[in-house]
Amino acid sequence: MDHSEFDLTFEPAYGRAVPVAPGVERMTVNNPSAFTFHGTNSYIVGSTSVAVIDPGPPDEAHFQALMAALAGREVTHIFVSHTHQDHSPLSRRLKEATGALIVGEGPHRPARPLHAGEVNPFAESSDRAFVPDIALADGKSVSGDGWTMTVLLTPGHTANHACFALGDTGIVFSADHVMAWSTTIVAPPDGAMADYMASLDKMLLRDDRIFFPGHGGPVKDPSSFLRGLRTHRRMRERAILERIRAGDRTIPDMVKIIYRETDPRLHGAAALSVLAHIEDLVEKGLVETDGPPALMGIYRPT
Image (cartoon, rainbow, N blue to C red; front, side):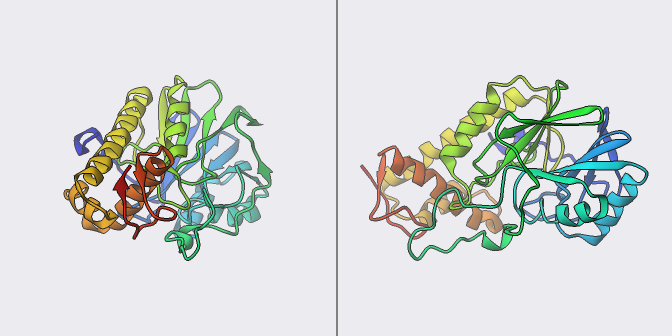
């Protein structure tokens, strides 16, 4: 996918609950960045008795706006897609205020153990205090007043990432697994490319109508978009393999060429994405290195 295939049109409407589908409202946190686009999307599902999806970071203005939007309505469940600081921490304060049960896959964990001497570059962005009241396995559902949410486990961006399907409406809350404005960051050790690709394939087996993601506007043709993302990742893998076969031995050298048109602020994340692909290529036996794959490793074709 190139940049023309992403949808950058989005009105965040900070502080307001915006109806996006029958019985679904979106509220966007005012936490814009190169990684969050205009901010994190929280969703309110239901009418008089509701669920909240991804309350967001510990942002006072967002909490107050959320409570104002929820006034007069019972909150029974808080769904959390994954344990990054921009999605899950506010769930605890919202639970204290409403008595709702927190639903998620489980506590934060890396996709693989850290190698000797490895430092997790995303340690500070992970919410290690998160523990759900209800830990749901793949395909399990939770029902409230007039709604049912089914958990679709989609590891890749994080090991505990989940999407949530709303009954038989064709609506999926896709969080950071699939977003209309950008590709997803897959950064070891929290994320894993093999897991992410398997999760794309899993979502392609479904026939959903629309995705509401954790950042930006909706994905209006999920099947087509998912196929585009899968092709993009396969092309990126091929580009990395070609750079190694052409003589590049380090990830920084590959990033300079492959991501030359990308915002330099994102080159650190790009390096981690290349590492995620290389982990997969080493696992497939197409690339070799001494010891486990690492950001500063030396790579060669097999």
